[in-house]
Length: 163
Picture 1 (tube, rainbow, N blue to C red):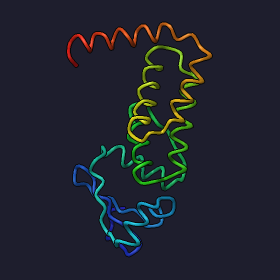
Picture 2: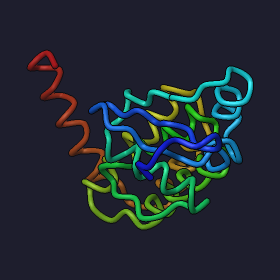
Picture 3: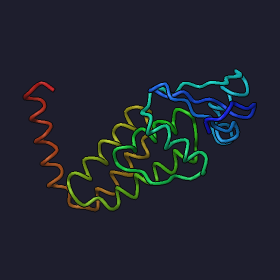
Picture 4: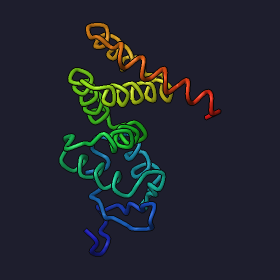
């Protein structure tokens, strides 16, 4: 991928100044944002330096394979943000489906806190209510008293310490 740049390749410049050659079609096939940058504005180099290097590599792999691969809790938010920023509808849906599966299987307070925080982030950042609605419907059928108590205690501690 690091060979000489060809006409059908785009340079992606990462946060650490690393560059990756990516086939133009990989970027433009499912992303109206990339399509506009490349085909309308004639970008040959695109800086994606607001995201971790690892997240961008993973995102490009998902675009190349045209499917969501392995996602860990720690990388979910960046993958979802990349999908939203670059308007990759199938990846946005896949990320939200992944989150829904996590909602359905969450057993302990840590998993529930992760899901709650991600749903709240999506709602707060983009006004996307469907993830919160999904969370509410899943939570309504489960006993969440331990999670709510733990969450409220953490919130109370944060308020007391001014965080």
